[in-house]
Length: 241
Image (cartoon, rainbow, N blue to C red; front, top):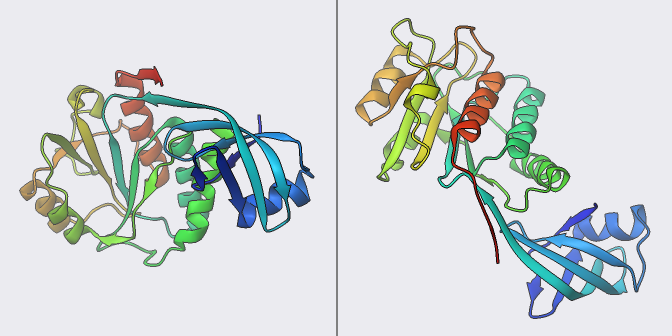
């Protein structure tokens, strides 16, 4: 099923703009009278009939709608240092979106080899993955943030806060510590891991150390393992409105 994304839905009308309109008309060659499926990124699924079609704008009349939420029962937020090879970070974003995640914050650490990202491209990757996997709630991608600033801003309670690092004293697995009924933030460091100062600073801000297994994982692999573990243990809730 082909899904189109739009935030322009009001009453019984909707429209596609930009790349979505171009893809609908020029690539898939939809015309007036065709029916297509829409998502709003907030859990809304819609069926619409095209009433106007150009490569810049597609207008639709809403025929039916459904709000569907498939959720873990608590939010998952991963703060991950982007990899030097940006394609690896893009792969992480794609797969995490497919598995299920709510928020992603790229973090800048002392040992980070990548200090600049292109949010517009990353947003497109997340959207494409959400549409492909039929996840109608889009994960939120935050701006790149220095680790120290991130640690100071994320103090909401009750919430679980973990840091996955490679120091020897870090032996308790995420599976043993994660509680499925609470929101969770997990920090994933850069190639070369967090520095000792950063680990200490995270402890001072309420983050507990966790392991993701016996193997030493790449940054993007660690992010996927954390994402999958939380989804595997979580109490998924399905509701339709």
